Length: 474
Image (cartoon, rainbow, N blue to C red):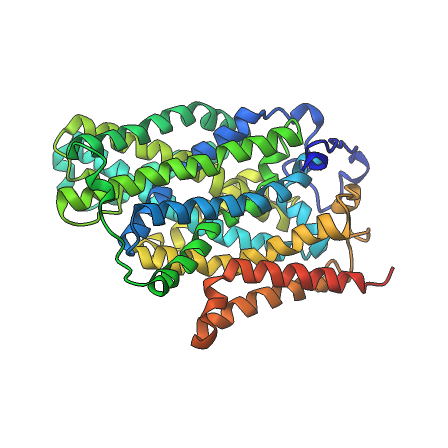
């Protein structure tokens, strides 16, 4: 751990390859002067991304699936502690060399092959962008109805609210990454206060925390609990498995390895645990207050009586959704799409492509119920992202010993050309991890392979990649 923190930052002059088709200003390595993100900036980034409605839905969805409060909180917290490990490891190369995720992927998958993991990650990000924008649009439309009650009868009201919120996201896409740093830094304290305010409501509505946590587990045996816990834990890891890949997109701006490591450690697990606790407590409170578990906070807010409270809460949810969406679901796909044709697709263009595809993916279906959200969406895509993480970490730490030829990452015919720009050994390792995990989806006898999709895919791809690369021709 100490050696990782003390790793020196590297700045490479790439003026000789500026005309290469594999480089543009957005995916070029950051200069040392651009690496200004402190521990607070990294921590604020994670606070801004973690405090959001989908995080709330994670914990409250587990309550709805039958867990009691401490089982749900334990599942969420454990999942985030686990995913912090690949998060910090993949962040290392971004901080050291100043390179984004799709460029790092060129070292293992090849200069052209990197588009395989980049596009897989981008598709997931587009889905998440749609989910967050849909949720934010709902909250925004509810605010309009509160201010203008007659708006509720307007058929196109929800669509207009959605488009307004979508436009707010596009504004920050156009403004670029520094606007994201500003947004996260100022929003983080506000978002924590908003979450604590919601917790306070639940407390005073009941009179104590006791009734919130008195709801028993719905599982009569350990076996019944385990059947839900295992895929749920995978879902918790899958929730941030996206960022565990493209975290270099942010840490390339970090001042040091220490800043990125400590910033992530104090920003991710504690915030997820806190906001998940809020989700657990409030959802448990709704069982006592309303007689049912209400896991969607927008639905919950519609039951409040005070217009001022509703307006403030909906505004807070909108800000939370915006900060998460921009940082988590725009930066990565924007860089990933730019990696396809660096001379033709900029960060802004890639971000706009993401915004359009996020609508096309019909996010309302992914949020139909907690089962679809956790066991379908989160676990499903983790079967693809786990193997990618396995290949990236194995390549950087085991095969290359943290040493990269940065200039060759941006040219054809260099060290990372492999065969026609593709390292098929990385592709084979990726496919092996994905296929083995998905077998559990179609063969009931080995369902555990799918329930552990991220873990299975990561382990298989990691091991297979190391073995295949050891046999490569010098």
